[in-house]
Length: 147
Image 1 (cartoon, one colour):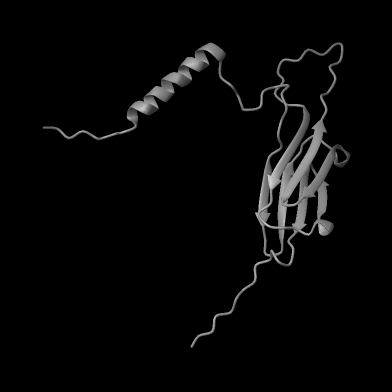
Image 2 (cartoon, rainbow, N blue to C red; image 1 turned 135 degrees about the vertical axis):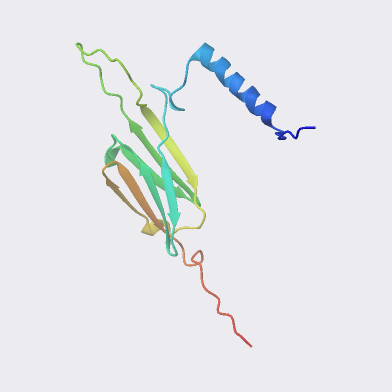
C-alpha cells in the first residue's frame, strides 16, 4: 500500500484557481485595485516612538495647499484632491492608469496626542505628520525592587 500526501485544502485551492481563470476570461485581468478614473486612497505608514506617532503619506502630484489635515479625539483625517490633467486637442491617450479625484483617509491613532503640538511637513510628494503623545500616553518605566 502506497502512502499519499494528505492535502486537506487542496481542492479549495484548485477551485480558487478555476474561479480566477473564469473571471479573467470574462472580464480580463485587473492590473490593480485602483481602476483608472476612480477615486484613490493614499498609502500610509504609521510608526510610534516613545514620545510621538509619525504618519507618512505618499501623495505624488499634490501640493501642500491641496491638503487638509485634522485630528479629532484619536482620529487623524487627511483630505485632499488630485486634479486630472486636461487632454489637449492633438493628444491621444494610449494608457491611463493614474487615478484622480478627492480622497479622505481616516486613521485611528493608537495613543492620545497633544493636538496643539502637531507638526506637518510636505517634501517630494511625501507628507510627514508628527503627533506628540500626551504625557499620560507616554510609556513610563516602572522600577522593580529586588528583595
